[in-house]
Length: 359
Figure 1 (cartoon, one colour):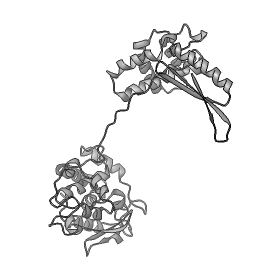
Figure 2 (cartoon, one colour; figure 1 turned 90 degrees about the horizontal axis):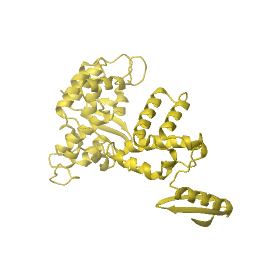
Figure 3 (cartoon, helix red, strand yellow; figure 1 turned 60 degrees about the vertical axis):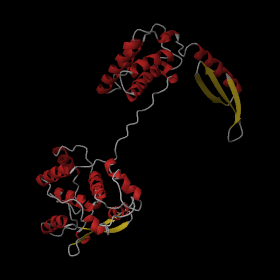
Figure 4 (tube, helix red, strand yellow; figure 1 turned 135 degrees about the horizontal axis):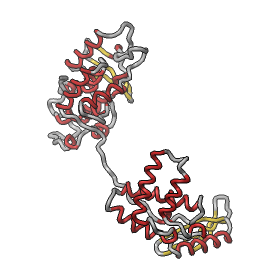
């Protein structure tokens, strides 16, 4: 046991107790030296005794008995699903230490069980089981007063498994065709033109939803988006132009938005119909932002420069464009370097003409 004297910000003394026993550490800070020595002596004895000190009322209790009592006492507070979940987890622990008295369930014994558990489930699941076990021992410590200290406090969690998932999903031409076909069959007549415009103009969902008829210039074949860094103009390819012309011809009298709610004077909310469409197309989990990533990635593979693409989608950093590229797209070779446009890409307008044809 080691006691270090320090000072708080207000200048008053503080006494920090540090205890090291068989690789286990424990520390606590006190205002009074006497209290620090008393706690340190008790904690040192606790660690040297194996990590579990059982009080008289808990001497005859086993782990299985503790788990059963917890579920019985907490049945009114816990929801039925939570009760079943805890019961299954306690049953698994009972397979290792079910008939073991509480006084013999030391941190080392729990670590042995964890090593067995690691071979059966993932590290994240091991941590979940440890949290449930700690909850049970905390109940024994604080409510039943059967033990003096929770042994799980001396058992470290396993390292979380880091699952690196891609930020986006990039669609194939076949998947795009299936999605557009399903959108055409949707009861929401606005869904197909919304998806078509998102794919052909590299726009975000919120940008397309906010479009008004004042943002469409049919004579110049331009569409204006108000993005994070101000207004930008994007060329409307022939297919997208025809889609928007049909949308304009069928607009409701007095409509301000290109895709307006049928009952209110505001932009349409198509999230529900979008979810149904992607499920029907076999693309469950697809996000609207994946359409922009798909279009940008396809155009980059065809030779568009990062600079042109940044101009089209309305961002300042080319790193943002790179984050939209698929691993295969990032591996695409460049004759003149990543940041230099190829000879056939003269401007952002020419770049857009190389985009997706709408099916």
